[in-house]
Image (cartoon, rainbow, N blue to C red; front, side, top):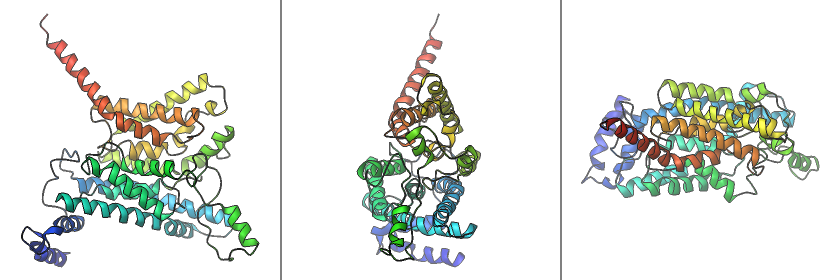
Length: 396
């Protein structure tokens, strides 16, 4: 590493003002800061860093927290694949299959997103921020494993361009870019993206084609078939999966959302390091519990009578409230506002999930809605504090 450091110091003058490659200064600084800890402060505008932990360390912690859910999700893809095909495979066989299935989308997300990040950094003559390193992994984790690479690439570029760069870049966006990418796919490609079943390949059709010799016998079947627990519940109000299966993650679903246990490990890492707000997570859980109990008391359909604690381990709620809702840029900033913000996410998510059968997964819409409302929540909290202090200061 010392020799690499010396080499970078040697060529660095070429990228400074007046150097041969001065126009590529932002690109050089991005690679340098990726390899070594930067010796300067985070830029004044953008990400809200209030202590010694800079943006690079923050994103590193987020990536570490994502690893349990990512690794289990990859294993889960292979597990269901071999369950469907009837082939024998062990722990590493399942994981390797999921890794191969996920890798193209991860590459597509990073290539397309970083291309725009580098391009805008060069145009604005600013540093390339590390924020997309987390976003680029989140996008394929919340997409179906069989989503075509070109769809992931287009959705990523849309999210970076419309969701972030038009507002000024990292730290200036008003909605979570990863969720915006998922929303783009959800509404732009409804034929490929279905709200009531897991986004997977049609195993039955593929296997029939193989049996009829219309496809080669060694055809690789990507994904796995079968409805998610949410899809089953939206259809008839019941699910064939046990609570333990849903908690541990032995269910179909997007890679990041299947295992609540793995997500909780990530939540502990984020809370312990102070990266994410436990207030948002706890209030989100409270919002789900309140709305779930209210539907139990007032609803008459089978879905409304689902025990409220099922909603914690169904679909993408756990992943969304831990990794999406706590985004420090798009979430509420005031302490009281965080409680309101998280609570409303939980309430709206379950309301959409249960009441509207067209959107059995309401977490995405709930978080995006609250992202837009977060400034208003903070404004109301601040005005209430100002009014209370003014009343306290009045002379009786």
